[in-house]
Structure formats: structure tokens, C-alpha cells
Image (cartoon, each protein chain N blue to C red):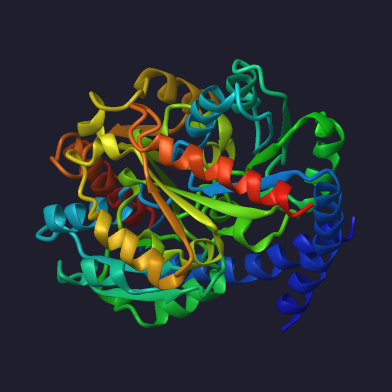
Length: 221
Length: 221
């Protein structure tokens, strides 16, 4: 019982900062996507490809969450996009307070979209709202088609799902229809994009969805 | 500061059960390995192949940790090994108290080894001792060679590391020497086994290491 009380307290503190972030982002008319996946599903590669594909159309800023190192932020900065690295030093997810501090270092008045790349973890980040407009879950085909059934929370809460590394489909046992069906059962509004960030296959549909989301966000103003 | 105090309290409660488990296992002369990885690195496939390869030599029992479903326990039970499924219902790691309950349902007097397959998560399970003899971390080559640098805790704490899915090495960007070097820098005693649970490559060395660990454990009695 004690454990449950403690968890509520942490979430409430996080919730306060999450509401602040959400207010700040809506004031600036800024779409913000919180990208969540297991380690190594390809989030950073997807991001670099998307930034490069859309750099003449929209302005993207990135908040990189990692336990340690700035390997991912370095990769993002090579695209020219503004990026902030947050090291959680052991914590298994980004907190809204950390994201709030990150937002202060980004040129928010000159951006259309902020993408938060959360710590690689399919479980914990789904429980911590960061003030984002929506969550995007990435599942690599190398991880197996049973992941929506086994880790349902993040699939139930996301706006979009990228099934990445489809270039490996011939080399791994992954039934794409099973993954789609299980994720769709958890979340009937989930937009699903099978992609290969490596080869570029399917990336246009995902990039167009982002443009559409930004358009809808800015229209609301 | 409050958050740090809370974490200590939870860990202490866990520690108490961990010591109980450790005492119970050592009384029975039982080796216990706690297997940790990201979702989809291939823990269950490794386990089924190892159980089948060693079933005439040693008796293995399994504790399966998953957030939801008994998919993995069903796969293990097809080998004939005794298995207990623990569903954490959202929690991101197994606790020592859950493992202690699991041990009560396994025929511990007739086993040489218990393998705990933890919840798929490269971060949180490394912070919770379960009373095990040692941790084994699994990294799939599809996850990328930067994972030891980015998620150092589990690599620093493990006795052995399996680099799985080496059959995919020609299809993914993974520098096996970099992964070995980074993990070895964190932990100079780490035993590293490149394997493909799918094709069987490298599995003999891993299986022989298990036999050796059991021998050392039983010799201590």
C-alpha cells in the first residue's frame, strides 16, 4: 500500500510540470511528439531521416533523453536541427520537469515541431506525461510481433506507431499483420506506419502525417 | 531529495526479500541466473534452446516475468521444464518478493538451476536484486553496438553477456568489437558470448559456461 501512495506522489509532481509544458507549447502553437520505444528500435535514425526530408518545409527541434552519453544528440546536430541532450543519470524515463528545462534552451519561437526522444524503454516512459501533443511508439521488426500484447500500455496511449526495420522482414520471424492487429485492438485510432528508416521505404507516409499534424495544430490557434 | 529517500525505502524492502531468496537458494545448492535485456532481444528463444540442449545433463526451472500475457511461459513449458509465470501488471521489473513467491511453486529440491527471465527492460531490472547468483545481460545485434555505453549499469553488474542474433550481422550496422570493448571497459570480468539462438551458432560455449557455473556452485557446498 505504501508503494502505491509513493507512486501517486511522484506522478502528481510530474503532472504539474506536464501541464506547464503543455501550456507553454500551446501558447507557441507548437506541436510536440514524445517518441517512445525499446533501446535500439531506430528512433534516432528515423529522426535524422525525417529532419533531413522535411528541412525545407518545417522547423524541427529535438530533446534527446538518454541515461548517459550524448551520442544521439551528436547524430541529430549533424542535420543542423537545434537539439538539447538530457542525461537522466540512471533514471528510466524523462520527467516533465526535465523537458521543461530543455524547452528553455530551444528556439521555440522559430520552430513548428519539437520531437522528444525518450529514454529507450518500452515500459516506464508511457506512465509519465511530458506535456506533449501526442506519443509515437516505435517497434522494430527484430523485437518480435508479440510486443503490443506483452507491453500494451504504450500502444494503447500512442497516436502513431512506426513498425521500423521492415528491410529485415525476410531475416526475422515477424508477422506484421499480427502486430498491426494486436496494436489496433488496443487502440482503434492508432495510425500505423511500416517503415525502414535505413532504406527510406514507407517514410513518406510518416513524414506527410507529421506535416498534417502540424497543420492541424496551427489551425487550432 | 524526497524522490531519493523514497527510492531507498523501496530498495530496502526489496533487499530484505532478496536476502531471503539468496539464503533459500544457497540452502538448496541452487544456481540462479537473472536474465535481463530490452524487449525482443531473444531471451525466451535462448532459454528454450539451452533447456533442450542441456535437458539430459541438468534440471532447469524458469521464472518468467512479464507485464502481461503468459506467451513466454507457454513457450518454455513446451520444453518440459517447470515454469512459473509472474505478471507484474504494469511494473517495469520483477521484485524479490515476487520471485520468492515464484520459488515456492517450483520443485526446487529437484533442480540444478533456476533462470529468471526478467521483464524486457534494459534499465530498471538492473537496480533490483532478486537474490540471484548472477545477472546475465542479452543484447541483440539489431539494437546497435552503442548500448553498453548508453545503458552502462546492467553491463557493469552482469556476470555474462550474450550478443544474440549474430545471424543478422550482415544485415545491420553492428560493430561487435565496439560492443565487446565498451562492455569490457565497464566490467573486466564479464564473460561475453556471441550467439545466434536461431541458428545455434555460439550456443555451445554459453551452455558449457552454465554447466561450469553449476559445478562451481555445487562445489561450494
